[in-house]
Image (cartoon, rainbow, N blue to C red; front, top):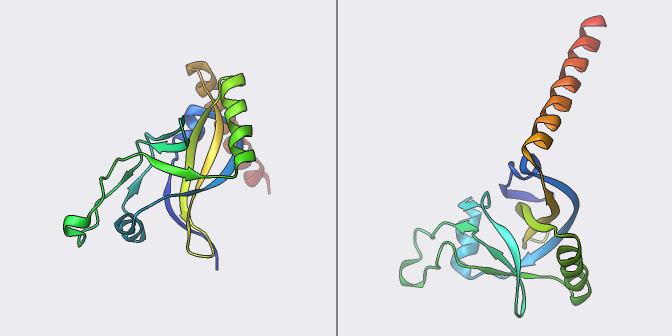
Length: 151
């Protein structure tokens, strides 16, 4: 059984240089998990931030569960990310020292049915970097077309 993708941040690779990625658990309430099973999540504008007692996923939107009535969750609340202390310390050092940021790349159910977040350690791209990346991608596509035409 493979992992089931819930949400993906497609713009992340366009806006950032992704240097490394880390898998983290996420602390959720019951109605959030049920909503995720229905596919109601958006992580486009979200990021991970260090607060006083750990790492939190900020600005991630998980839609309210339709049948949750009064026990429903707040859609955009900060959610605690679960990592080992050693991993947290390593990430904190990278973010502080090198001025990197933590961006969620994808949200998925792993093989055991647990919700996981893949975080990317990222550095921001400038406008000219984005254009350069686009040129390289276009050239590689054109190269593939030419090779295909010759065969």
